[in-house]
Amino acid sequence: MLADRVLENGWVRVDGDTIAEVGEGDVDGTDLGGRWLTPGLIDIHVHGGKNGASSYNAAEPGAIQTVTDFHRSYGTTTMLGGLVTGKPDDMRTATAVLADSCDAGEIGGIYLEGPFLNVARKGAHDPELLRMPDVALMESVLEAGRGHVKQVTIAPELPGALDLIKRCADHGVITAVGHTDGSYEQVRAGFDAGALMATHLFSTACGRCTTATPGPIAASMAQAGAICEVIADGVHLADGTVEMLFGVLGSSRIALVTDAMSAAGVGDGEFQLGHLKVHVIDGVARLENGSIASSTATLAQVVARTTGMGVAFPDAVRAASLTPARLHSLDKSVGAIAPGLRADLVAWNDDLTVAGVLRAGSWVRPIEGAPHAAR
Image (cartoon, rainbow, N blue to C red; front, side, top):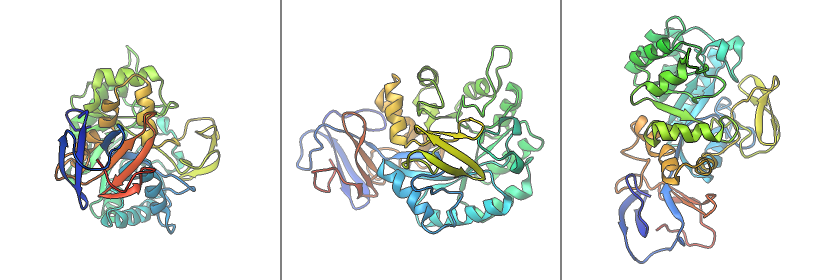
């Protein structure tokens, strides 16, 4: 599957860590047995996964490697390390450690979901730690990130939010409007100030949309070019909502994300999300008050679920690869199958489970029964 079309009998030649050539027709090589071959997936909103590990606990030995290893094994070859709202010192410490992982090429950047969120739409964020927009605090966290903070969510209706959005843009940080109770006009003002995307559209942490009060959802959908995050895990959004969003916005304006927490890949039990306790029952993560808290999905599961909702598989994949790559200006290195890009590839079984994963030319998840080569 290429960026602009699907090759029915395609092949890929990898040289080292790079895609050297792409073509169509019969060639010598390893036959993937008619499986889909797609770009590696890119998750720009993920907090953790496997064995209780999370970005928030980045200072714990092996935590980030645990998270990246888990998600890579399911096809997410690029991810941002996402931080939920925490105490300022904790956020600075975690950001500094995550920056080391960025330097090492383990993650593609850092995402700050908070603390500048509206308490009325706090979702799974500790209300005691939410703050009004604070330029000095933001600057200190950006300094700790050494240029690796790539994305931040801000509620645009809060006092000082528009100035902070502009300041983030000056630093090359992409702002998402989210966890907002703002009016249509206030959210559009956030986009005018430089915001480029919306955090998990239609989630419970986003103001409602009615004909009389269109709010953040309508403002985000109406903003030309704005990218809208969608958690299509079968829990956050109804199937029809996801199908409608793809029908209206198309895959070029949707970034499929997981919002996955440390329970992903573990199973049911009790976990922490930042400072909050989370209970996972039947794979659904909830706070003690019953509110949905993050997810336990992989991005491959989200892509498969989206396809099951009536969205074409290539469109679902593009929303989980090329669209986030373009948003973060990563499309010169990842996000598609094209010569010169990093050799990040995912092979899929007929049931849209992951059969194999190649990252930077090396097998993270070899295809069972096949030599370590890709076609």
